[in-house]
Amino acid sequence: MAWPSQKSALRKRLNIRWMRWAFWRAVFRCVPLARIFSFPLENVAALSVADRLIENSRFTCTARFGDRDRQFIRDAAANDKLNDAAEPAFPPIFHRQVAILPNCAVLGHVGVAIKSDTGAMLARMAGGPPNWNCARPGRLGCRRPLDDGVASFLNSSQHYFHFFANLLPLLGYLDRRENADEKLTVFVAADGPDFQHQVCDAVANAYPGVRFEALAPGERVEIRRYLWLHESCGNAEWLPVDRVGGARLAALMRDHYRVAERGARRLMFFSRGTAKQRRLQNEGALEAIAAACGFERFEAHSRNHGEQVRRFGEADVIVAVHGAGLTNLLFARPGSTVIEIFPENCIKSTYLWLARQMGLHYRALIGGPGDYSQAFQLPADQFAAEIDETLRARRNGATPLPASPQPEAAAEMPLRRSG
Image (tube, rainbow, N blue to C red; front, side, top):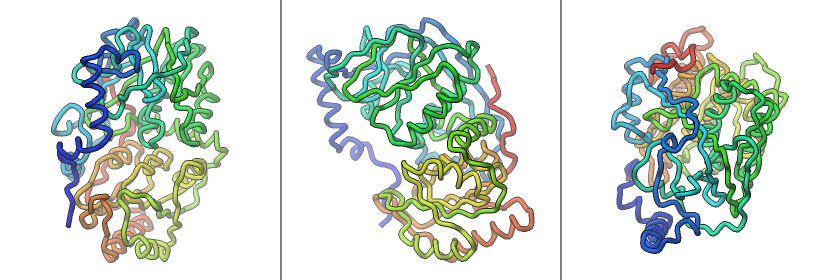
């Protein structure tokens, strides 16, 4: 049986987190205790409460998408998280907001920023209740004031993709800022994984005046001048990055891990290991086919981030099932090829977009239908034929002809300001 790729509205609400959020929201709307228990009840548009507006711009992506690209993106729209529209826009337009907000607080138990006087959660736009994944009641025992300089917060640090989605706007701001000596404190979750600490150390060493501080779950930091950073487009699956920014990040991490650039040809079969979601049920058979063609198996985890940076930077061809580990395409060399494998009922355009921005060739392989956990199989003959075609094309110096998207010219320029 093939399970549907999207949860129904009923299934989204039949879980303990949503029901707990709905219960406390109902209680705190009747009893005014939400601020005491650090529980945001509403959103507030960050720019509407800003003391200083630094930037509020829209940028048109310069990457070119062929007809097959566009069709693939439309097919993926049922599974991609779209912010502003039911259909993806071409060319994609990014919205960047940078501002200084007075008197805000960061809540350690949920990792969100609020306006201290109202308790409302900061958001790109006002309206509607806060995301129920980012709001729960907590009596925070430690209130730490921060009056020195400007402070910000990197949220979603437990998830690899979301961490970089929040880090990239910060790096862009640091590269654009007028005052390079400005003191900036960035709070991160104290219980974050090892890769978070490594990346933050690398950024702190590369940019003067920037320091990272751990925020414990029981802490609330009161910030006199809060730096609001937001950058996104209509598709929340697309990282706000261009080839210049990606190269800057890759160089920064290679320097941190002392990884030397190598031109040696390497082939990588990137395994999801014991992951519960999108498990490739016949991975062993496919891995044997890949190994016979010279592919090396590699599995990422939170403690081998330096090895991830090195492996992706060296690989000519990367084969992987869709997952957050492909965020490492940020460290791949332009001209490399990525073959992404999907169950037929859960394709996403996340890494087609990233491959385009990083100057990579992209090929998609669609397997059979996934079950409730998106576990699926990919026919061995289909996999072998794709590997053979890709390697033959690279040996002959030809641009690979994809099974799904057409790899036309990738973005050579940063996002272009349109207004």
